[in-house]
Length: 115
Image 1 (tube, rainbow, N blue to C red):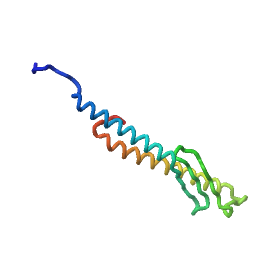
Image 2 (image 1 turned 120 degrees about the horizontal axis):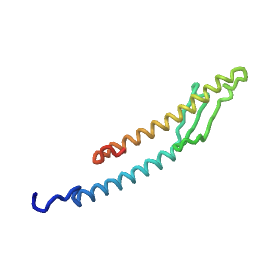
Image 3 (image 1 turned 180 degrees about the vertical axis):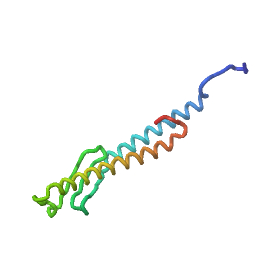
């Protein structure tokens, strides 16, 4: 056995570096999460006839309907436009969250398999 024996694990300096990097990433994650939660995602359907706004916390904050598309004879079309606008806004929020997470995970080179 080599002089000093097996120490196992990381040296103190490496361990401190990893802890600092983990703390920095946690701070970046918290900042990203706050930014996403305070962001509104807006999507329109039917050429702007229906607009849905969703917050980063997935709460609907607004649905706007152009009075010209309100046709009592064609309620199904209005329902379809509302669904398209709501689903589009939710998809925008999900896509932005995924993109932000991918950026954060890109900085995890020192922690493979962590997420």
